[in-house]
Image (cartoon, rainbow, N blue to C red; front, side, top):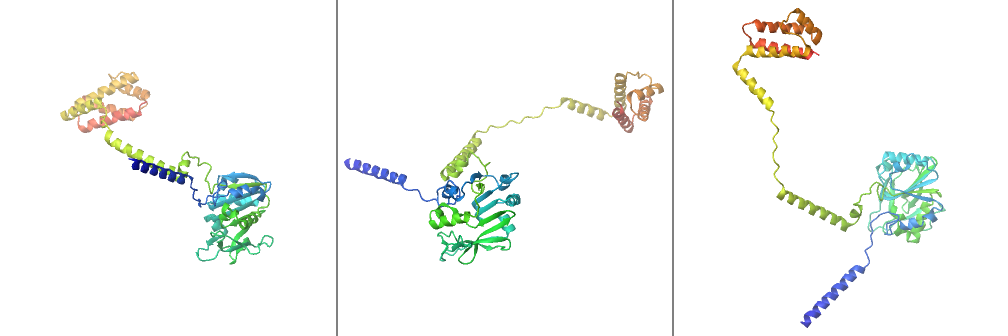
Length: 392
């Protein structure tokens, strides 16, 4: 019994020590590129955000999560720099047009991105590449301007300086930087009174690079081309997304554990609903439409008359009903259907005289004739319906 107690105490102690070690162990470094100014991870922009006052003295910071078109449309920006630091950009033609107007007004744009997007690449005729060789030494990069040029260049690990432009239209741009192979890695385009600066690697401006003296020096010199702007527009649409994306579920989807818990909860709820629906669904009774007894009565009477084939009786009933309609509607006596009666009916009813004369000719034929054929009965019906359509 004593041995069992010692075993349980020892196991509990080891378990508690293991849990404490797991709880207090340092979190693994997050190497995912966020390019967000509040992130302290290696590829965040916390340091650049903290040092913006020394790089852009006196500049007012304005963060925008709207697309370029929405940010610049109908805005009269002066002495403003627009900063884009992201893995990829997704400008459309309208964004580019507003950006060009913005630069023609004397403002500046600085872009640091691996993928500039189809619109910028096609318009500026740019193509980028990277030194992908695992055994190759890192490229040394440097500025072309002698005032900014370092003696031995800038060499960075993790391939931060290995991006360069494979295709550049040098007739349209000014080369600001090259690597030790002579490849262009920093360019400037002039638009009116403004300019566009493009750097093919945003990680040169991240925390990881700025922690090193060489990286901080390179970043500050590259950004010094933005000549002391009065306002600095910091783009977050390319990194954080549109400002309208304010879904309540964004917290769940940001963290893997919460995202999995949310998905499992949805799957469990769906499974429960499917099983309960299968087990408890009641039979839906079939509701028959109400029967139209009047229509059935008319159908039965019609069949009786059709089977008896008594055209004279049918015709006489139709004539009686028609004459009753004239008496009630137009207040005319129908004992004599002479010329005076016909003239009065034409005047009061508004029906055509020809129709009325034809109708009463058929009526007289039926009333004084010996036999009513199918054709005569059909003609009577057509003339009565024609009168009804013409009468007012």
